[in-house]
Image (cartoon, rainbow, N blue to C red; front, top):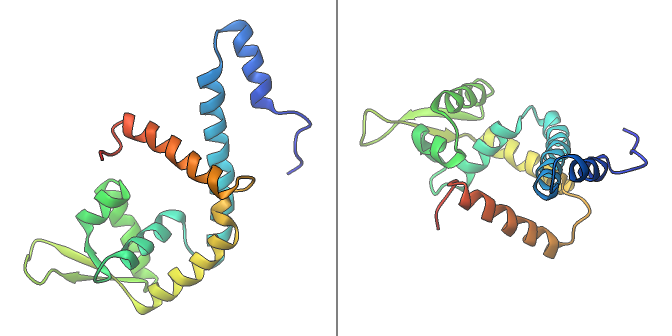
Length: 165
């Protein structure tokens, strides 16, 4: 894609200021949405050769980070902040690819665990190398600026009820 010779968000902000009022929030939100598209595109491109979407990759990482390499589906949904139907679809696809398996919970017959397989561990490792190679799509910031961005976005997420400290 050829870069534009001007920043369309800055241009829209100027017009917003003239015709609507303060463009501060509009410019920030539009910028966040555009950066999300840029990052998503880079991460999708890095994961595609590994046969993963970001949602499936996140699920593999979550299982990898768990103490035993397995979690109840309900817990996966909570941690990934996804609807149970979405978790089921993700697990179905990962299972059909041999990357996870469903197992009965040892003490609660009502609960199904999702366990990462050796193939899932290998796929996660290879996919992680790919997304790290593109810095998860984040370009143009120093490490300190990236930390500041993360802190600022956490404030918005906290204020919106995404999590509590």
